[in-house]
Image (cartoon, rainbow, N blue to C red; front, side, top):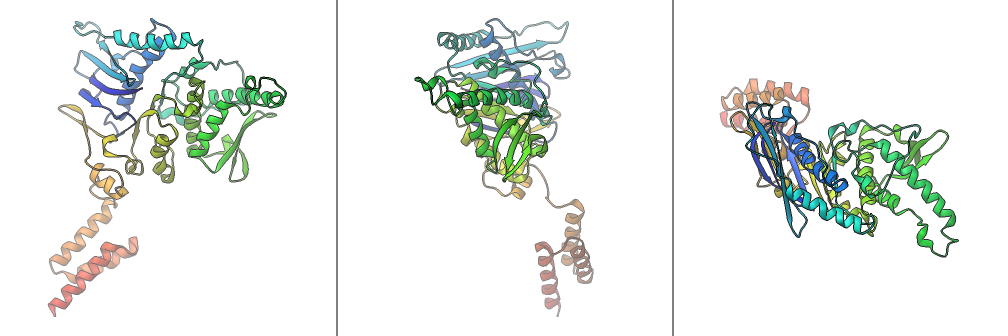
Length: 425
């Protein structure tokens, strides 16, 4: 199941923006304020109606807020077309400013049809059924709440995979509590699995925990042995042979563990009868996928998402050229904001395999990747050489070399000075 089409009309900075999406990877790129988060928020709003109607037939989802209506416009609308490989389902939401005449109306009939199909499948199998996952990881996922104690009981049935899925994102508190409960069950099953006539009643190792462990091992191979300890209550992990509490990890490590762990957890819960829960279907929204990540991890994150979660569609935003160079052009959306038509989207002719410098200059609009002062100094040196001011150029080369060290452009300038001098003789 995946989003085939998304249309924003007079929603925030988008006057009229239709997008046809790739069924697996979609990467949104642009300057701050270009509309990347708006596309993800719009998707989350629309999908929240489906999640809530799977739970309760007549439930509503997140509404479009009046502040989301474009300045100077009387209304905003969002449209989504969701495909499940057999049929496409389309629905739309409309929000008017107070007091405005309402010509357009929300269209939710096909939304209700799709929710009914999934709800019927769930009910017919007494809740033991694979369902698609929809989850949003916003920028505030960087705030990780790792509790020292568990104050309340949680339900972890199939539909709990949807809890806070489009609002809370990677909640480490819920992940911690879920992990502890599953690990307690796994430890209990370990005691009895060898003594039972029907060993399937007590599964060891726990299949849901195994899915999470496998996903984390794929993304973070230097980590292992994730477990919950008591007295005091804490979550520990082994990193390169050293035991650490999760709170001792860096922000980047915690962000990666929280995102991958939460996504694998939700897929494991919502795919109880799939041999490999990580093969489950879903639409995954991630804002600033490079958040807190070292360039080494930025380089692998998109590729790993596709490998570990092969049947999920991803909509992600980024500012990182290290991410973009690993994305095929059909999956890349270059966003910009204009004063006359609002949000625009362009598609590059090439992106995959380009150097970071080429990505920055060709796709992200940088004139140069050097500091402006250095770039201007180099420009003046070559102008001096062209004008025949060789003594000035030689002095400028020496001065700049003292500031930045050896550089191919300075070497080129020095060679040109020598050639000019030979020609002059």
